[in-house]
Amino acid sequence: MYRWRICALLFFATTFNYIDRQVIGILAPVLEKELGWSELDYSTIITAFQIAYAVGLLFVGRIIDRIGVRRGYAIAMVIWSAAGMLHAAARGVISFASARFMLALGESANFPAAIKAVAEWFPKKERALATGIFNSGSSIGAITAPLLVPLLATTLGWQSAFLITGGIGFIWLLFWLPGYKLPQNHPKISGKELAHICSSDEVGETEEKVTWKKLFSVRQTWIICLIRFMTDPVWWFLLYWLPKFLNKEFGIDIQHIGLPLIFIYSASSFGGIFGGWLSSFLIKRGKSIDFSRKMTFFIVSVFVLPLVLCTRTNNLWVAVAFISLATAAHSGYAAIIFTIVSDMYPKRAVASMIGLSIFAAAVGGILFSMAVGLVLEMTGNYYLIFAYASSAYVLAWLIMKLLIPKIETIKTF
Image 1: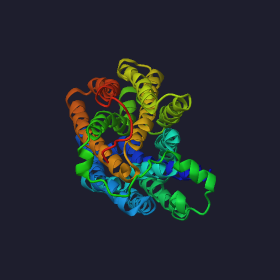
Image 2 (image 1 turned 120 degrees about the vertical axis):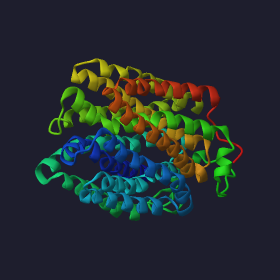
Image 3 (image 1 turned 30 degrees about the vertical axis):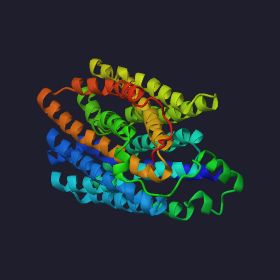
Image 4 (image 1 turned 90 degrees about the vertical axis):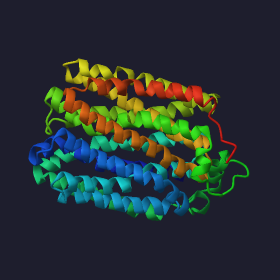
């Protein structure tokens, strides 16, 4: 069962990834007052992260496919941990934007590396569950941050929040570097487990690299990228603007932000594991991969629809309930959309395709962040933003249903 230790390492890396990117969202009300940021200033800093994230994703997947998960993940962890700590030295919009840019370059490797690791260590019937488990680290990170950051900021100053959270990643490297190898080369894996891991490998699959030209030659690539472009900006919006939204609409300050965020991201963590479990459960009950993935996608997309109602209530906990449903649904969706890539693409192309699809998501995030800043400056309310967010997932499911008739291995690679 060594493969689940690998999943645990991926979970902790993803947790640290989201702690580091969440710090600025929690500190935003404090930094806005202390440093005099406007809505557009904050939007600029967030957009700098997303531009770098997009740029990194153009290359990081191919780098990981070339140098391997072990080295690629380790290099990325060093870069983003150091960048997280550098935020403590920033003072103005430009210096914060520069630190965010470097942080994003490192963090862009997390999901391409993790999904490739899952493809290397798990058979197809377990990949959705393994992906749901490691991806729940994004929610655990988002839960941990509001517990840790306010405590550090109020006792040691806001700079300490960046220094301490950034430094955690270096501890992870002490476990990752000696612990990760390919299954066929790992001394701690049994022959039985190796046979189980390789049970869904395609017969005759080669090690020939897959080019971008080849990726773009198939329709599935365009559809996956479009779906990520539409939906992922909703998650990033909630990640970066949620503390500001709760502060503006319900008067929640940094000392009291912890409990609502813990509730919201606990639901998200459950949703990610549930989405992966449900898809794997349906497969074990004899349903096809195509049916299992698409049915789970549809179920979770429905749970996002009530999100728009959080702008129509004066009750904090009613709003938190609607937001919690949406974050749980997004995590369930993420487990499925990541797994679909490993269902359709050969292992040698998984990191490249994940990187490409998250690049499309990052471009969507850049445009959405700019739009959020402008809408808030012009209208002062969140209704239009939440209206789009609540409908994006159902639209994405419909596009997949119509334009990818069957989720199966692409034969042209």
